Image 1 (cartoon, rainbow, N blue to C red):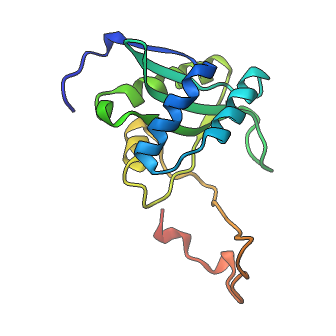
Image 2 (image 1 turned 180 degrees about the vertical axis):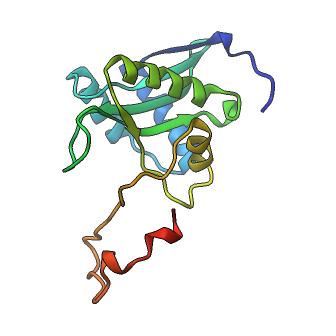
Image 3 (image 1 turned 90 degrees about the vertical axis):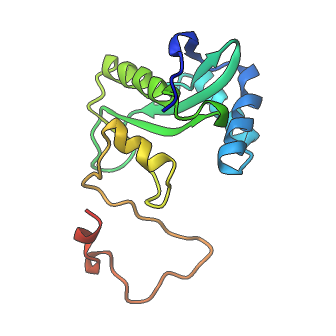
Length: 169
């Protein structure tokens, strides 16, 4: 990691004027453009439905963001749980500690709200996010992430319980 002065970074709440910068950062990192998604998230923030998006700003320029929430939605999940949905840093500022700053800010806010555990979902093949979350201390949990494709017929005869989950743990 290059030596970078983080003292100029300010973490703050998202503003409507930040959406275009977030969309740009996400497109540079992931190759996707989701302005409608981010406008919906901003509306949820206004309604108090999320912990809120946070912005990392340097010299009045958005250089990173994080989005998450708190609460329980899934059966059998703890009541006081936190979720990190997405985190992104402008490519010019990656590997300088900004994502860590955003995560530490969120972690502190989660603790203030009596959150017991923080979850996130990352693809096992995501070579950008998976190493970051591992550095932050995340480890595989005791739950299995399942998916169902609405566009395909489910395979015949495959059962979740037949799979040897020990091979990924």
